[in-house]
Every structure is written in structure tokens, then in C-alpha cells.
Image (cartoon, rainbow, N blue to C red; front, side, top):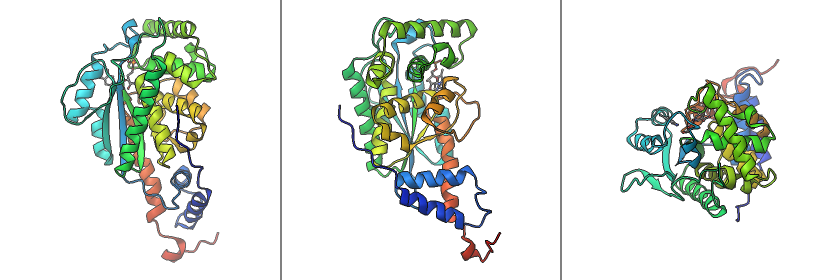
Amino acid sequence: MNYPTIPPIDFEASAAARKRQNSLTKPLGSAGYLEDLSVQIAGMTGSAIPDCSRKTVILMAADHGIAKEGVSPYPPEVTPQMVLNFLHGGAAINVLTRQVNSAVKIVDIGVAFDFGEIPGICHRKVARGTANMLTGPAMTREQAESAIRVGMETADESIDNGVQMIATGEMGIGNTTPSAAITAVLCGRAPAEVTGRGTGIDDAGLQRKIRIIERCIAVNQPDPGDAMDVLCKIGGLEIAGMAGVVIAAAARRVPVVLDGLISTVAAAIAVELVPETKHYLIAGHLSEEIGHRILLEKLGLRPLIQLNMRIGEGTGAVLAFSIVDASLNLLRNMATFEQAGVSDKV
Ligand SMILES: O=C(O)c1ccc[n+]([C@@H]2O[C@H](COP(=O)([O-])O)[C@@H](O)[C@H]2O)c1
Ligand SMILES: Cc1cc2nc[nH]c2cc1C
């Protein structure tokens, strides 16, 4: 599989952004991490005063064969039902994208349901869900590669249409199970250390979920040094798709804001496949799902928000868009000491 070349970070642009931050009418460094964030985005975009006003969340929906094993308290039918809710504008992600003036793109990359002719959906189904990874690989290599390609093409389309910042979002009943499995393998942790309650499984269910993840890893023997092997064997179609989004966005200097555990797992796979993508990632929030903190630490990312959220859909990432806006608006719109006639002597 061929991946695009990722341009290096533009250190001239980031140095210019830092210089401008230091010239603005506030005590030196007083906007804290908001300053660092604007400097990072300048380096990513190659612009000293970045414009990331046009934003979208790309929400990938898919089903999971492992959901048959009762790893989620909700039935798999909720995946297509929630996709219809997204299309009708009634889900959390719709409310939050409206609030922050972001677009939302709903992609059926692997839902086990035929949506037919319905306005607003991107029909990019690679398979009707993954296979049950308890008895063999979740996906063939061809399926995983097709899903990555769908993600790359979807991001490219959005960027061609003027999008300057992308959030990754997902919907898929059961998807915290492959996400915890991938986190365990990539971080060299025991499943018990990285497996959470997902949509809210009870204590007995959590113990079963951990045992199932242990068996999935034992049955499939994913090679931790081969991200494509890990993705095929214990991954998901939406995880592969979001990895593709990260790769294509990074190739075009478009920053990617990550949501919770599943989004971050996809980014970790992207970084394993194409290491330079790492420089284009922003962690939107810290999810309640316990593996998320461990994975963010591995990626060296600091989440912008911590509100104990575990909705998914891209909600935490989209909420973090307002922090990004604050950071870039300060850089762009504040007066300098010279303009305002304020003394910068300390
Ligand atoms: O973003 C997260 O960290 C997150 C944490 C827990 C649950 N979710 C969402 O809940 C679904 C997966 O949960 P589960 O219990 O079915 O594996 C899926 O649709 C995700 O979007 C998302
Ligand atoms: C209702 C519901 C909404 C969701 N959004 C993301 N994952 C979800 C899972 C459920 C169950």
C-alpha cells in the first residue's frame, strides 16, 4: 500500500507565531497552553497566522463481529439507528457541531445495514461489519487497506472543498473492544490495564470483556511491530478509516483533532504506518475510557479538555474546536504592545 509523503513541520512559521504571541498585549506567556497550541498549528499549517475557521468532523460508522459476544450493553442495531439520528440532526455531535460552526460528514464505512437512498450519508461500505475476532482476523488485509483508502479519499475531498481542520469521530457498537485490544498490543500492556466500560458495561461484563480481549489476542497473535497486521486482526473498519483520514490530512498540512479512545487508536495506527503523521495531531479531550490516557502518553499528546465524556461520535474533539478557535483568535486579533501603546517593559 502506498502512502502520501508527509511534509515536515514549518519551523519558520512556528517561530513567527511565537514571536507574535510574545508581542501581544498580555504578560509574557500568560495565555499558557493556548499560546503553545497556536504555535504548533502554525508549524503544522505553514502559516504564521493560521486560518482554521473551516472545520469538519468526519464520522465513520461501522459494526463489529465481536459485538455478538455481549461486550457492549447495547445491541448492534444501535449503530444504524444512531446513523439515522446523525442524519436527522438529533445526536450529541449534531448539537455540538452546530454550536461551534463545524460541518459533519457521516460515512458508512462498514455498517451491517442497508441505508438505501437517504440524503446526507456517504456510502463507502467496505463490508457489513467485521468478522468475529474471537475466531479469526476481524478483517482481511484487502478490507483494511480499502477502509484506509476510504478515509484518505474522504479527508482529501473535504480538504479540496476548503476544510482547514478535521476532527475524527466514530460510531460502532462494540468498538471499545478492538480499541482496547489494539491499545494493549501497541502499548505492551495487559488487557486488564487498558479495558474500560465503553458505553457502560457492568462489573461482571467488564471482566468478561477483558477475558474476551485476552482470547482475541491469543487466537490472532497480532505482531506489535506490524501495525497493518494488528489493524487487520483485532481492528475495525472505522478505525482503519480514521487512520486514513489522519494520513491524508497530515499530507496536506491539515491538523487533525482527535476524539476519544477509538479515534486515538486510529491515530496510533496511522503513526505506526506513517510516523511523520504524529506532528499533525491534536488531542481534543481525555475520555473516561481508561486506555485513552495510556495511549495519549505513548503518542506524547496533551488533551485540551477533560470533562469525563465517553460519547464518541467526535463530540470531545468538536468541543475542543472552541479551544482551538480561542487560541487562533488571540494570535490573530489581539493588539500588539506597539499598536496599543502599552509598555512591554518588565
Ligand atoms: O470516545 C470514547 O472514548 C468512547 C468511550 C466509550 C464509548 N464510546 C462510544 O460507544 C460505542 C462503543 O462502546 P461499546 O460499549 O459498544 O464498546 C461507540 O459507538 C463509541 O462511539 C466512545
Ligand atoms: C445511544 C448511543 C449513542 C452513541 N454514540 C456513540 N456511541 C453510542 C452508543 C449508544 C448506545
